[in-house]
Length: 76
Image 1 (cartoon, one colour):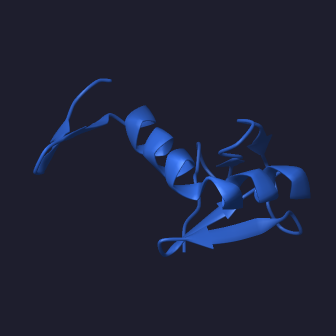
Image 2 (cartoon, helix red, strand yellow; image 1 turned 45 degrees about the vertical axis):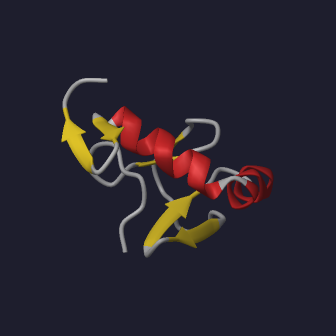
């Protein structure tokens, strides 16, 4: 399962935006069949309380604009 990645072998904490060069040993969570890595337990708990919000923000960052009945791809 892949987490939020930025570059080769780097992961991005979806809560605070910190880059994690080595996610091994860091707190993780799985949401909708995707693994997310965090810099701290505090960020993991924040994510778990509002996982759908962070997932939607992630989609917006990669350019997915949600419209009724379809997904339109472009620059947000």
